[in-house]
Length: 426
Image (cartoon, rainbow, N blue to C red; front, side, top):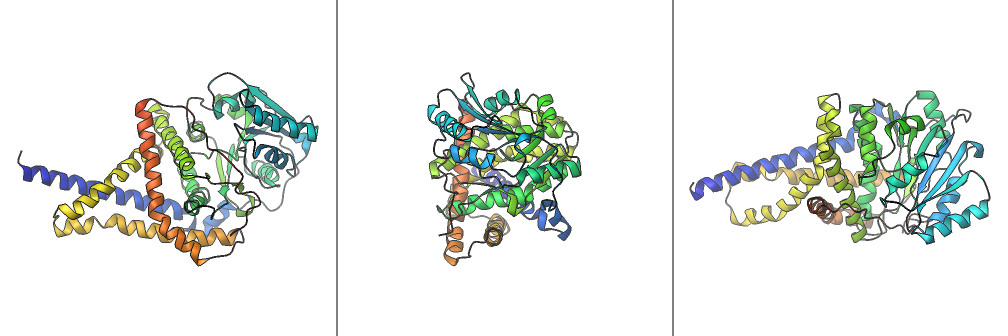
């Protein structure tokens, strides 16, 4: 084969990848804007304003590992929820080799002195969140089981909202909103906060309508009998929440998504770039695990399977796109493409710019919803950070693929320091 023929093949391969990038970018934009497409969709995120009488009981699971800085306050906030104490079971979950967090949990329990808070301590393997959750599920008593992470700040009325929603709508699962709050702590926090904002407020509604819902890691409320029937969480998966979502869809569970700005569970972004990359690595690697386990292939409809494939293949696609950045730069300077082909290569750039302006609008909406001031310097920071942030996502994807191929599957925990607590816009 001549060099000219090889070059032609490479050029066409490059164009195909560019088109793939464009299609993926357009679909990602569609997901972000889904809930705003029609005015009627606004009700999807509305929490009930009139509460039903408390009837359902709740088991709240609080898994923690090395969370000495935030755990005691989280237990207090969960205990203070506006709901009859007799209908709440709180289970603090720790491993035996974490004496600091255990001490914080015991100190708070001794302070409150109530029988509704229990401490579950385990010492076997695997050392991960789903294993602790499964142990606690065995002794859970509530009608509904939910999870809050060790740094979470749930809204005081969240259980009233859930009790009313379950009674009014006869659903099996409710995913309520989770929102990172410290939008201006670090340069990457702006976009990290907006990812959550668009994901829970819009994208998850698209998935729920399609019948393929990768759930979030906490503030998911599931009927306990259904969780027990499913056998709990997958202890071998690094994204047990997304795996649970697919298994619930296979069970034809009725899933409801609610993102009401007032009732979101407040969380913090990772406090460093290293922590952020490790978190994304774990999420991406978990998606790769689910992809190759193949449970999603049993989904009933082709549209569901295609959507699952799209979500689960994203780590590999994102890793490929990251590798394409230096290739694109080299081709820009070294390869003379036909004019039409060169013009085609600008399509991802147009999508990139559109996504950036959508995030700018999203930042305005987030600040308005949470009564924070709009500042031009923050908007400029977000725009400047947009491309570097994509590179961080790409590094996390590449690292996930590398770890999966290497066979590494240890749980890389995200550290929490409570940046979102008592924080005000700077």
